[in-house]
Length: 252
Image (cartoon, rainbow, N blue to C red; front, side, top):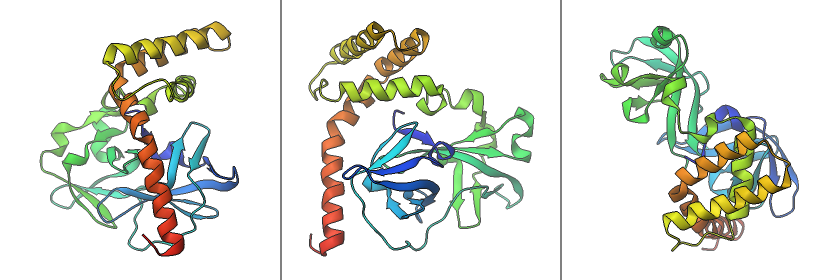
C-alpha cells in the first residue's frame, strides 16, 4: 500500500530526470496497456515508461534518466471511462483509480454515476469485479454490485488517502530508513528503526506531532512493505538502466 497512488495525485506532478535533475514537464496523463495495467505516463516532453519511474512523492515524480520513446500504440486511459452492467447497460463512469506505481497494477477504481447514488459518493470497485475492459468501456461481473463500498470506507489503509502532511512525513521517513533497514531485519527491528527515525524528526521540532505519530504508526504497520520496497529498489534501478541501455543501443 506504500506505493499505491491515485491517478489524480499523479496528474500535474513535475517529472524530474534523476540523473541530471532536468525538468521533464508536468505529468499530463496516465496510460494503460491492453492488460489494464499502467504502462506509461505522458508529460509535455513525451512518454515515460512506468519502469523508468524511480520515485513518486507528493511534490514530484523522479525517473532513473531521460529515455525518449515514441508514442506507444494500443494504449488506453480510464478518465471517465464508461462503466457497464453485466447486461451492457450504462451505470456510471470511472472517476479516478488507484495504482501501484512500481508494478502498474490497479488497486481500485473509483466509480461515480447511477451505481453510486445509494452511497452519496463515489464507490470503490475492485479489479476482481471487472469482467471486461475495452477501449470504450469497463464491464462489471454479475456479483460486482454486492461488493461495492463507499470511498470513505473502502479506501481505508491506503497511503494515498492520508493527509498531505502525513504522506510527506512517510516519504521523508522512508528515505531516511533506506540505508538502515536490511533484508534480514525482524519485524520488531524494523519497527524500532521506524521509531528511531520518528524520534529524530520529533527532536527537530519542525513537524506536526500528530501527523508524525500517524506517519510512524502507518510505517510500523506496513513494516513488511517498507522492507520489501527498500530491498528491491536496487534491482528495480538496475532493470531500468538495462532497459534504457538496450533501447539506446539495441543490444541486450
